[in-house]
Length: 295
Image 1: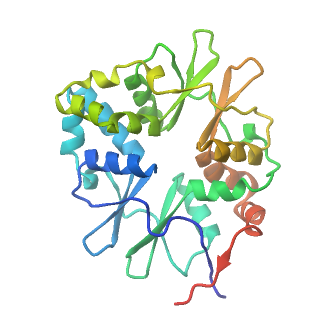
Image 2: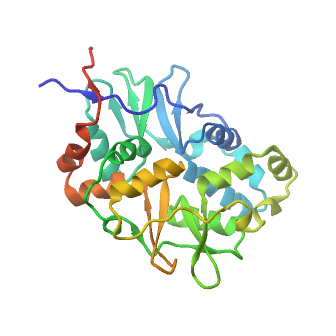
Image 3: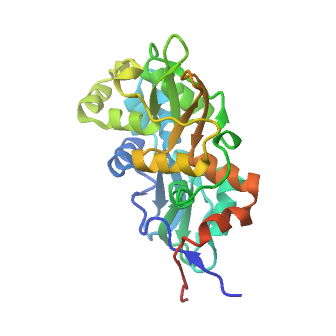
């Protein structure tokens, strides 16, 4: 039976890192390209790992706790914290169902695409899969896949407090609430990288001034964020994410209290388990361009 690969993803990957690069360099590269994962390749262009934005946040937190964020970022190499031998698919031998299965089973947001010699060709991320699913209503309510009662910070919290939540609970999105518990803003891992990659803030970190992350979280959080309701169709929530250029939505009640959080990761990792891999694929396959891969 002929196998087919859906032509989705980035070819080549937007960020390819070297194993010996520092996390400072990796942070800047991810920020400049606006992505969450950096593929790591050796001198021959062969895949050796994947670096996620969460690993950088973890290094920032450890650096702050030990009295030197910049030292931690500059002394830590990509190879020290990357996922070695990450999941991958070989071009021409795997289908989109295989990619979805890997993401759902391992709860990950990116799968590398390589050739038969393990040379890096591209990457398929949760954003690509979720973008396909946003093309139509899914007939699954947001509350069926959302993360319930997510960890939040308040408008009196500091940036480092949000970083701690992201690192400890593996969140990239953290709702910011007021004293009354109602949603006021949203801070994301991307917001943190954008903030710390600004040259003025990098210069402060180089001087050992870690107070840069002690600023109020409201300085970089997005106020009046887009929201969704628990009974909303998941496909409509995804379309709202695409229109706003975001990857997660707080789920609120009529009074604005946070009930949950729904992200592209939830769609890719939870929905297939809820409705089945085959049905998940059936929702989208009519809208995909599938091309024969010639060996």
